[in-house]
Image (cartoon, rainbow, N blue to C red; front, side, top):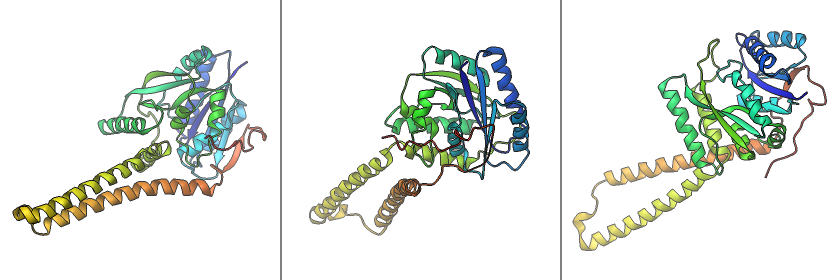
Length: 325
């Protein structure tokens, strides 16, 4: 019997975890009875009743595995760390417990996987959310896709089913802040995209806020491309050339057309402020890369687990084969 692993990160989700478990289990019993379900919940140090509910679920069902982090390590680190506990032949990389991504698509994902598709990705073609967030996400996806050296499909998140060999390739990445959808895309393999409607949250309050979303967006931009720094270099050359041309123009005007020479301090102030702003932007981009390098070379564990339930000790050992070139 083949095993399908489903990884569900959670934080302060006491209103959703049991419903998520029962919904996924019912889907497997009705549509995928020939497969064994392994549902891995990764808790990011919740302080409500989430962990107690997960303990009870795991006690009654050995197919439920629970990882409790020692503190909140952020959603991407926590979710990626949870993948190393998956033992399935195919893995649903991330199914949030709020079920905004529809678990009803899992049987269709499995069908395409059995037909030879190694990555079956859901695409959030429609979103039940506000105008600003919906369009901000679309702009972000297009920026990341346009800057990356490989294709990161627009509107595709981490709700994807991947083959075992794809997961093994993903786990070879030694990344202190893994951008999971980018890692999946960079691995390659045969991929199929299925659109769906990303629904609004029915219970509880999302822990995601604007600063977290901006942080994730910057991580996506700077993780898989050097285009921002290359753009800084090109713009710097362009400004330098324009400055030289302007200087030659001023010198020539001094001798041949003195009235064309800019007067007063306004021109100087505008030029200084403009160039200073450009320098600060470029320095900030450089700082993003330097900070990322600094955190990476310091090493240390991706996540520290406080408790694991229904997980064999052998699986709990570190599984890091080094970086992928």
